[in-house]
Image (cartoon, rainbow, N blue to C red; front, side, top):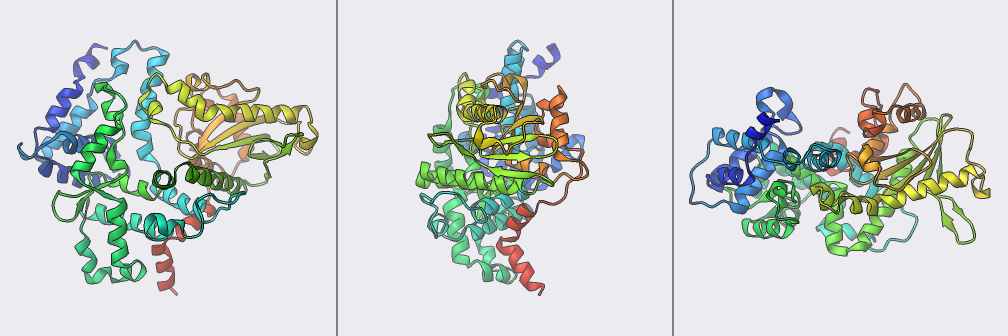
Length: 486
């Protein structure tokens, strides 16, 4: 529409507006604003909706990557103007014809930009220990041998997540800043009784902090396209190192909401793969598969059957089969995450989506056929009720259930949904109504069947998830609090 087109500004104009200010003046403003409007607090009112973590993260990236100190000071009004311009950036969806393909590309970019920063930090951090400490894979590990965490992080996994939690809390309460000299304060003694100061600072320096030169090189190296309309959706180096040196005392976290990602399962994945390559990914994938089974075991009045081996060649079914009075659910686990081609909605997006999820659709369809024809190894699985498939991914594929996404995957004789680990953790704790019935009814609803499971069942009450609670309770500050209450 004409009024939308008049509002659009080019990426070049936006970048120039950010570069008008010295990074040393603008970056602390961004950090303070992020700490103030953390965890969705930007939704508090109409005038605060511009303070989103993704807009703040991009303003910080532009300032560090392209700014210089021979510019003007910055005020809160200047930052407000920058963030307003961010909401008006030109986009392919405006330029392209509003057909299904352009809508798909827009939703992929928007979900990759925004929804990944709206996941629950507590849920993500709880999942780390629940998968990597409390779950047991079926095969001998390739690299996750005892002491792997000390070797990788310089401390235990529990302490590493504990450092993540403390850095996050300190940044929020100090305008996005952490200064190692604070560790000398008397009030920090209880913390240092758990994690020594030398360990705390060594881990922080090694895994959480970067400098301007390194940031600029990584920002350039990460670019996948030269398209200015896609620039803001490209990988932001703050996601791998959320603190920066050189912006006043200690370290500055421009976006506090990015700190918990370091201790999340995805953050651990990238750190591990950088060190051990595919061996780490394979080990983590097997632990994640076992973890999904632990979550499914929380499903009330459901029988959970592990993978079935059949035939002469020891072929394998889906990873888990859930039997309820209402349906049989075939669960295939994929420890995958959307790639940059999906987040940027490039021409390779369909190829990437099929590469990561296509085999799971085929596996579900094949297992459903084995049940239907009463293959001897599957005769214990009922064939008298609806059958559905569920693909559980480590990181959300936010619009994977949309019709234009589903159409790019292999056909299946049964309805198949994609859900994240977080969706599953919520699903199995629904109370007051049989979960199987909800899934059957969802498939019959043309609109709700395209939603993420979390959104489709958001109105239902849930109990606490004991697997996640166990993970959260294993971290040092909770253990220390429990000891002090004895």
